[in-house]
Image (tube, rainbow, N blue to C red; front, side, top):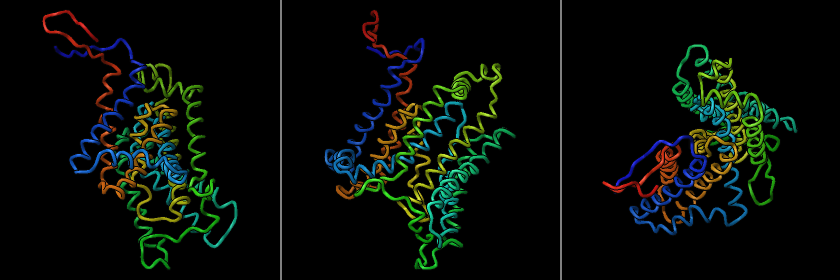
Length: 360
């Protein structure tokens, strides 16, 4: 008995749906092995990881507010990835969005008014777009690899944030902690549901998914993005401008990442601190691919990834699971997704040596 891999005549739509589910299943199996190696009861760990966060309205709210930025960022990245534009710097663009919106909040700290939050949102979007415009310009004008330039700018953004909260924006009444002043009531997002921290960012994330689905499936720009990704030569012959798609992809993903940063500092955090998120900009890359670069798929992938964040925190407290376990789960998920992706293009056949093929 032997295995043989044969190329499929076309991409298998069934496997496009099945392989993410298979990757999740393999991740769970690997997680059980990991728990056993750490002398942690696997059943209890999985319960706290994946079931407990769904048992109360408040914990479901935590899943939703963590899913919202992941979904927004992943949708923006997916548009670029479909066009072979590789923005890996969403973490930096999120940070710049947080800085820009936080700067507005501090500038209006002594003021009150309904106009402040919209200004903060606009500043967050523009901040993310401005940071994304740097690798977009370098790619379009000088053909600089956008993977490296966007990634390196993420670390620059983090250092800029640290410089501000350790320096000129440090709270003078904050007992020397590296943080800004707490934003006032006009600068923070109120919860939508009493007893939870669910805020308007969840609704915005859903709106982003719907708009992106229409953009990709029902517009000429969406068609250009698909052609540029699947057949670059055909796109050039058709007169589609790659530089235009590069700018569109970076500005869209940067703006959404910046908005996600604004919603974090004006929502759950309520001030600027040295670390805004546990790496949502990087995790969103996993979310985008787990969702098959499809906005609806990204919605469910973002919820799953947010569940791993909340569940990981619960498991740390309940069974002593190491904090790094959440990152390990996310890394395993991406690894198994990439490992099983060959099933989309190849068929596995079992063959008896010296006999006719018997099963596929």
